[in-house]
Length: 393
Image 1 (cartoon, rainbow, N blue to C red):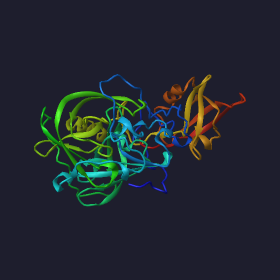
Image 2 (image 1 turned 30 degrees about the vertical axis):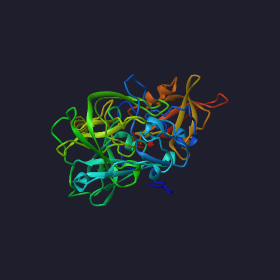
Image 3 (image 1 turned 180 degrees about the vertical axis):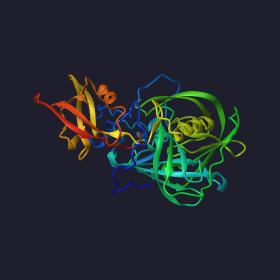
Image 4 (image 1 turned 120 degrees about the horizontal axis):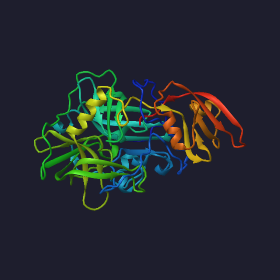
């Protein structure tokens, strides 16, 4: 996959239900502010036994460390399981081309990350004939536009986010104007230790599904998923471990069991040494997808797209210090500039960057909220801000 030269504006689909506990306060990757906190994207690290994360294969116009909050798209190390950077087509791949049967109900997902001037690729599974797609949340995190190609036919559709569960790394997409699609063959059985498996996915973002054989080496595994620097870390639990060579771009793809049915969703992988891949049990993933599809919206499951302010933040004296402002974003339109300190949201005092994230949580795209701030010279200011539709979280 090569980098997209012209990127579209963020999706205009409204958030379907009020969100709780998250808002995309920042996704301003072009500023290169390594210390900036991108709230609604970064999650706190937690102890675990293994560090690593399979990721979408990525191409970008600048190093991944200049994309605050997007550790899964990091360069090298454990972040993508390949140690590769640059265009997706340069990523190393292994295994053989997936069989026709292994491609049925499987899709290749390509995303544009407008605010990072980047693109990424992953994999997904068709849940319904009208185009509901199951994938990892990190495959679409930060996406401002998504296209999906049906592997068995080559038909390509635009897609929007139905909902996400960033905590458990699950997302559901909806294809536009899709019908009559073949669905993925999901297993009703759980994985068993020693079972022969095959991981299938869009390894390297090449647009060709490859298959990597292995066995189930452990069950009910807990890992910490992060990039090689440990940023953006989160704990994933109850995973299937396999020695199949899961790679960047495989994320969201199927882990087939010995009977040819899908027992897991490829999610994470180690880098270097003996291959260690991890998959979310398919029963776990589809149970979360069912909650997303039913409209549940809570601290972990989020419907649609988040509201978007368009700033990157650091803790400042008596408020949230604005480290960068997205050109033409809601904050910029209201007169907020880099160097000011945001002190209130809707009349609620803000004492830190995390306070700002909490105060904005629950607002929807299109909501108007009063933002108060102090300029670099100490002058107070207040203005109404209409929150935009943010990138996928």
